[in-house]
Length: 116
Image (cartoon, rainbow, N blue to C red):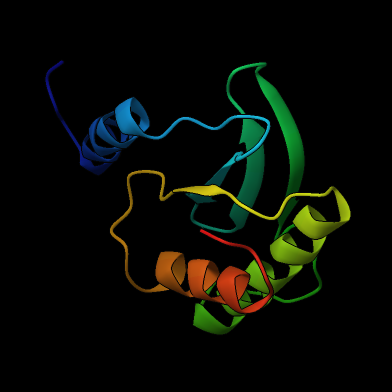
């Protein structure tokens, strides 16, 4: 696979992460996806290929995708997960570096009661 741009490098890093991170029904994968306009969080069971819960900044009234919005999204994602009975997850950073918005989402989910 010849790498041409930043998106190709992101996909390559995500494939390396996905080799090691597998979600199950007991401990689903908490996947973070950041685009130019929104942030998405999904809880997935990879063994049965099902999305158990999800939330994003599309659904919220908060604009932008900075650290404060990421903190709110992490808390809301943890609430949605607890409603579905999810208490433990495997964290998938989606090929992004574990700092900034990705780290803020993970820390907010931990504070809200999800065990990563």
